[in-house]
Length: 304
Length: 304
Image 1 (cartoon, one colour):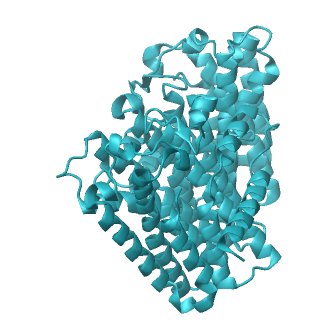
Image 2 (cartoon, each protein chain N blue to C red):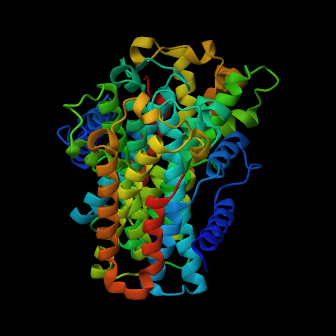
C-alpha cells in the first residue's frame, strides 16, 4: 500500500474511533461537546495516533481484534492531549492565534471560557479512556496513564516546553539568549515528549519488552524533535495557504526556532541527522519497522 | 481527639505530602512550579483529602503504613484537581475573580498564561500520582484513575457543572429559568461529583467491596451537594473578611444558587436533609463512621 493510501486509511480509523470516544453533541452540556469536537475534527493529520499504531505493529505484527481496538483507543487518547494543547496554546493569553488549520481557533468559534474548558476536557477524557481499556491488563493501563501524564507534565513535558517557550518569547529572544541548548530543551519538551510517548505507548500497549521499548522510545524522541524542527522550517518556507495558519509568524513573534538559532541549512541537516538516529534505533526490528521508518522520513519531508 | 485538632493534624499531613508530590520551585521551569505551589498552599481547607482519608479508615480501620502512604497520595491527587478547577474558574474569561482565600488569584499573581498552564499541570500530575502509587495493585490504580477522570469530566462532572453554571449566569438567570432541577444539576456536577469521588476513592484505595463502596458513594454525593449549598448560604450570610473572597458576589453576578431558587430557610432545610441522608448511608459501618458523620455535619455548620 502506498504511504498516501496508508495515511488516509489510518486517519479514517482514528476519526471513526474519536467520534465514538467523545460524548455526542446531544449530551448536556452541548456547548462543551461541540467545542471539543470542533477542535478534534478540524483537519488534524493524526500523526501521533498513526505513530502509536505503527509502533504497536512493530511489536505485535498484525494486531488481533482485541489489541487493535485498545491500541486505537490509546492512539485517540494521544490525539485528545495534542488537541487540548493546541486549544490552550492558541488562547489570547498564550500565542493568541485566530486561525488553526485554516479555521477559526476554538476560542474564536466558541468563546474563551468554552475553549479553556474544552481544553481541560480533552486533557481529562484521555485518562478515563486509558484506565477503561477493555482488553488491556491493569498493569499496562497504569503504565500508559503514567507515561501520558509525564509527557504532558511540567518536568520535561509539554507544559514545561510551553512555559519555557513563552518565557523566551516574552523576554524577546535575543541572539545571546537564543542558545542551541535552550531551543533544544524547548522543542524536546513541547513536542518531542508527546511524540515519544505516542511511540512508547504503542509499544507498551502491545506488551513490548524492556529492550524493545527502549528502542521505540529512542526512535520516538528523535523523530519527535525532527518533527518540530520541520515545523519551524515550514513556517519559514511554506505559504499561509498551505499551512492553514499564518506563515512566517515565528519570525514576527520572535519565537525560539531552529532556523533562528542555526540557520536554515544547518536546521535541515540536524533534522536529517535525527531521522537517521531514529531509524537506526529501530533497525533491530528489521522489515517490521519499515513503515515506521517511512513515517519518520515523511514527517520531515512534508510540505504542510 | 476534638474535631478541630483532628482537622489540624490532617491538614498538616496533606500539606506535607503535597510538598513532596509537586516538583520543587528549583525545578525548571521554575515559574510553573511556583504558580502551582502558590495556589496549592493558599490556605485551602483540605476538605476533600480529609474525607478521602476518613473514608479509607471506615473500610480498613487504622491504616497500615503502606496503605496510609498511598491513601495520602490519593487524597493529594484530589486536592490538585480541586485547585486546578479553582485556578481556571477564577480566570478573567470565566468568573474573573481577583481574590481567593484573601490572596490574589493565580492569574493576578503570575499572569494569565502561567495560571492557565498551572491549572493544566494540576490536572495532569494527579493522574501520574495515581498511576504510580507504590503499594496499590494495578486494578485499583486503574479504578482510581477512571473515577477521578469521570468526576472531573464533561458528563455530570466538574467541567459539565462549570459550563452549565456559566451558561445560566450569562443568560442572566431569571426567575423562570432558575429551576430547582437546574441548580441541583449544576451543583451536583460542579461540586458534588469531586466530593463523591473523594469519598469513593478513599474506599477504592482501601479495597472496599461493592456494597461498602455504594454506601460511601451515596454518603459522598449527598454530603457534597450539602457542602455546595452551605457555600451558597455562606456567600449571603458571611462577611468578605471571614470568607477571604468577596461575599455577596453570587447575588451581584446573578449566580445560580440554592438561596436564589429556594430562599434561605428552605436551603438550610435541604442541606440538613442531605446530611441526614448521607449519614444514614454510612449507618451500617457503625462507630467506624462516626468521624465521617461528624465531618458531614461540619461542612454545613462551618462559618467560612
